Each structure stands twice: as C-alpha cells, then as structure tokens.
Amino acid sequence: MANHKRGEIEATLDGERYRLCLTLGALAELESAHGVGDLVALAERFEGRRLSARDLIRIIGCGLRGGGNEMCDEEVARMTVAGGLGDYVRIAADLLSATFGESANPPAPGSASG
Image (cartoon, rainbow, N blue to C red; front, side, top):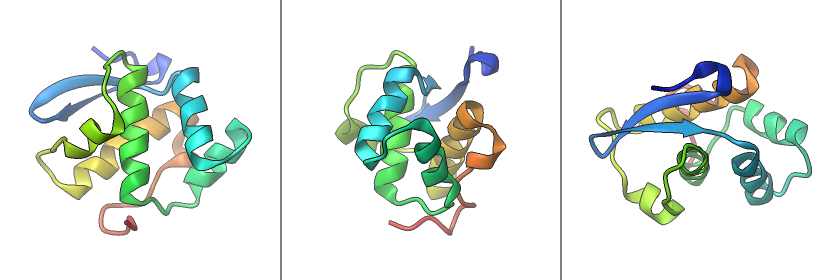
C-alpha cells in the first residue's frame, strides 16, 4: 500500500499494481534527463503543463524505480494501462502532485504533446 506522506502512489500498469515514488535518486534522474540544475527548476518545468510522451515515460519510469521496481524506460514505454493516454497522464500527475504538491500537475488528458 502506498504511503502518501512519503510521496508514494499506486498505479496499475500491464494489469499489475505497482508502488511509485520519486525518491531523491529518481528526482536526480529527472533533473539530468531534463537538463535542469535543481529541484525548483524541475518543478517549474512540470508547472509549464506541457508534457511529451517521453516525459510521461521518464516520470513513470523514475517513479517505478523509486518505488523499488527494476525496469528501464524502454520497458515502461511498452507497458499498457486500461484508460489509455488519460491514465498515463493521471499517473504522472498523481506522482508529481505527491512529490511537489498541486502546483506541479501536468495537463489534463488530451493536451499532452508528444
């Protein structure tokens, strides 16, 4: 079970339930992937409310790895969810919200770029 006070969420991917968490290591991985120098810049990047499909893969992948699941982004990219794009966006939004608070939510389904 996810502990929301620790920034954890639960999500169903490929029909299996996972715990996701953006640990410090996961956040450092996201900083590097997005070419930003600190957590404030990372949060500002996500507050822009424009995410690509690659962003969703990275956020979900970092959350999975932070939650103790050993898988690379290529494996994450092949995972499916029941609700399509909307579910991927919701998972990323929930994870960012659990980590940074409500201000870092990505866009609503249908407005993600890719």
